[in-house]
Length: 526
Image (cartoon, rainbow, N blue to C red; front, side, top):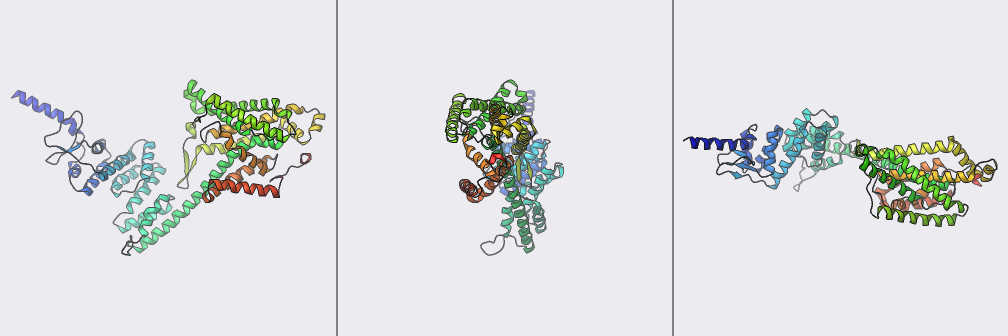
């Protein structure tokens, strides 16, 4: 007798872990999961998810993993490693529809997480899925508890989209009116569906006033989307213009002020980018805790390395070719090939990855759907700082005074004691160093490879020639202008035709105005 009693207690102890998961879940909510009604099963999943408890999560996870069982008397049990199942218990069959509902419910339960980042990610994930009215109880519960404004806005949109499928016309109309302030283009589909006609000629939405409200909301959404697209093109045009400006600014000095056709300018950009990669590698190896700040070391390092390469080129090759543009073009083209092969030998032919620091990852959302990435915002600000620094150097320093004097009248500057040869070296080095800074910026937008500079050399020359040779303001306006025109033309004509159109425009413009947007004044014109 005692032996049988101990066996009975042991069996109960084994079953307790199995039954614990359901202790806080009403058996009446679990019972439909074992039934044959597919709609009732979907509704049961939504109601269980709305509990937002650990026990509810365990039940749904077991259903997803197909470790949920039903007994003959209607009990629903979770099978785990520590428990045993009663005789006759059978596994609950999960079809594709139920599996999708469970997956949505599990992701929706993250909306009630104490972690703000997890709630935001869950809301954004649900925003990209089709609205499910079964999730409404969970969404409403999350909306009532949410304090963050951006997550609340997302949840309000999700609730409104789900309400569009309600049988209550007043609720559907409130949902339609509530979506009028949204700029999400994905909302067009459910609203457009309300205006469609069935094969028999009747409207999908029988209420005429509701259809009128849906049309008004569609117009409001289209207007917001158009504004967001225009602002996006404007922003990315400025971003592209900033990249072109950083690539062309050094060339504006070496070509614009010195008259040197430097076909190796793109490789100086590449050197700045690879210097950034080396700094990142050193920080990863020796200062992993400060990896986010490797750019602070990369900026001066890239400038100094590119400056040194530029000075070396000027002292060994360029200085012997002043006044001989064709020979300079051929010599610098050969140097560009040598530099590319040198980089391939040292770093390999494959691209290398330069990761953005964590403070440059992500972006800020404006106008409802437009995301302005932090790395491009930083590059725009950096380009403005570099332009300001170059202007100060050329106009407010002794070096800048000497550079302008030598470029306007070399003989007179030499007569009054200006070291023209040294100024030539420093000017070329300055232009090369600025190209190195441009390479740092380019490394934050994509992978770095030996051919990086080849993609920007032609655009850089176009910017300098369009703006006016030797004119800093012209270089800025030319770069931003080309960036904007390119971004507005691409959606209409495609990337290749946009480039061709810009090139044709510049050729025609230079034919009409050879001096560019801004003409030089003084003896330099001669």
